[in-house]
Image (cartoon, protein in one colour):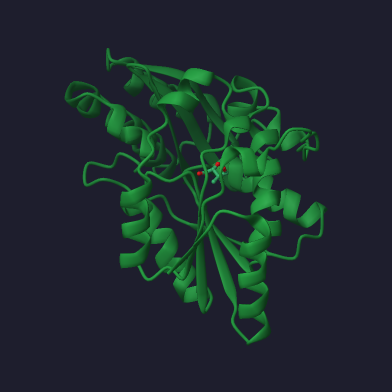
Length: 280
Ligand code: PAF
């Protein structure tokens, strides 16, 4: 496995591979790799003959400096996990390489980024679209693999790739979950044992709404209330939003008459977790 920290060297490796007939899949990550990331790597291996994992904790997508500082970092473990998973190359640039003095160009997403995570975390998605563009430019992949947990991110990246003719296929992998249903996240390691137990309210809430939907409930306010109520009953959890929206446009729905998704962001202690569930 090769490790690169420079975009030109990374691109040189990719171009040489592509020139000798390989196809390339990129798995963009912020490191602190867990079993969920490895499901993305597995999918990448099915989709291409060479797999690149990028590891970069992107400062410009954090709305709070404290969250960036406390974001878990585990470079040695991450490299070992990539090696064990059969990854061909890791791209792990330094912040100063990605954003050197004089850096000033950003990719600005459209309306998909205005609500939900974008509403709560101003500038977050502009940071994501900018870094993803840079990662795609350095790795030149045929496909890039993203998890469904970051549902809005996925929708925005798909839109960006289409709008900017970036020519990379975006693949989605269903959210990887712990046995009790909690979505796997690098942030889970920051939960105390009590908070970890409380966090199960999040998948329970989404499941309760999905169950009501399966039983025929089509009123978005009712499904939202079912999920919000489950979270409210957990004293350690505080919902920032629970929303039922059109699965493609992310516009709020009154009645579910098309594919929809219920999404939530929940504080458990000082850890902010997100999750979602498709409806229909
Ligand atoms: O989903 C993530 O881990 C990040 O937002 C991404 C796509 C790697 C960009 O920094």
